[in-house]
Length: 607
Ligand SMILES: Nc1ncnc2c1ncn2[C@@H]1O[C@H](COP(=O)(O)OP(=O)(O)OP(=O)(O)O)[C@@H](O)[C@H]1O
Image 1 (spheres, helix red, strand yellow):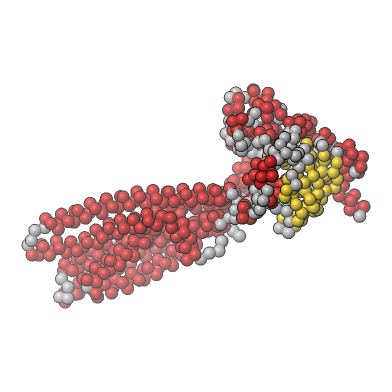
Image 2 (image 1 turned 90 degrees about the vertical axis):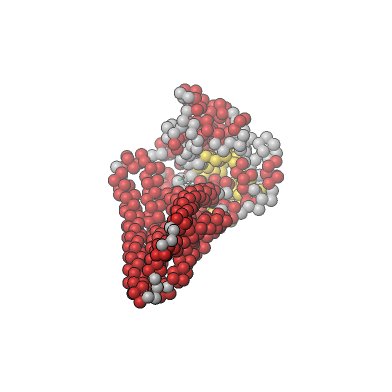
């Protein structure tokens, strides 16, 4: 579903908007009272003007009415400044709280739910849409709530002067209000579309910036720019529709105020001539019409503002309703204590076991009846691209849950473990691991439970980065650059592995975490890891069979099923496909013919 087209009705959006501001209802009520007091001061001005005229006519003193008029002007000014400041501050508070809620919501969402959405769209909802909401909450809500009261009070006061002229005003106002309602609806729709397009533009830019080098090397700068600009243009077209309607609305409102003034002048003039009302009455009435012009004009700005806020609130709400990981993948958390007992060197040796596991995405099976156990030492998962290695590791981390079968950690189904407790026992290095942190030290200590006691030097030695770290100009405080781009791909991967080691977890999960090293360095690093990680399970996914030579166990995964499990030498002897694969130059270089295909063809042939 396109972000611009999420379902929902304006009434529903109003309810949702109210839900957002409900926590501020006392504050809004106080603001409304202040606004009304200011408006009451302004409302009394025409009556005082009539008092001035009556005093003039009677030859009385103007000192008192003029002093009252001056006093009211000062009160109105002070109230207006106070309201503007307090409303602005309140709106900022609300939007800041909302942003924090959204940030928490997104980060506590499940991997599947968050990864399904474009990153740019998520960022746009947290940043741009909340900004749009701020304007609505600040001025528009209070004004739109106070304006009807003020208009009604003004109409009541006008009714005390002359009912016929009141009828003229009410008739013309009703037409204006109907126009404003229709316009508000149009602005909301156009704004929502514009925000959706803006989010698409952000996503497009995000994608291009993440793969900036590929974009440059492929010479696709223009194509990428065109793509982002096409979205910006689409946002412009939707925005233009909203602006056009706003301009029309402004014109309609100003025109209707002028027409009302002229109509009252004509009807009132005739009534003065007929002696039904005095000149003072007509002047006071005309001042009320002019007074009404201001809130009605303001409403012409307020309605589009609220319409934009409603559009924003619908997009924000869609993010707020993102299911939390705990709801989507609930844990029964029955055996936390037992899991906690089994630390490294503590209880029995850790073990990860797949027991007849089936799993698929959107009903398409990816893992088929997978069974094997990874115990202390190095288990290498080998298999071609798309065989399901990453998916397998994801199931241990509970980024998703199995469709059938069980994933067990120390004989306990991972779904029965408290999620945080489970993840504390695991350390994971993902493919294309980005470094989180500003400096080498921060990157290494990211997510490390007790950084104070962490043996950073030891971890650097284990991944053969100690000499490199020693040569850095500012040592461990050297900045790594955003996304770790200031260091090489291999160094970035080694640092990520060092971080995983520092977590002191029972199980290390490495997803192609050493793929950017040459085959010899990868093998050396994995061997060193196996030594370093004594007492732990190290489960490493790789394409390269040759690096698995020293592994305690190799699991060969083909098309989502386990083809063979064993040590390198045994598999070489017993499994012809493995033998062929292990000897293929493909695995050393990543080039040449694809033996996985050869293996598949051979199996099909055998069937
Ligand atoms: N989030 C997802 N939604 C739908 N399908 C997915 C998703 N993630 C992976 N797949 C599919 O599942 C299959 C297994 O993917 P997986 O990433 O586990 O393989 P892999 O062995 O790790 O591959 P590689 O070595 O290339 O990383 C692939 O066909 C992939 O297209």
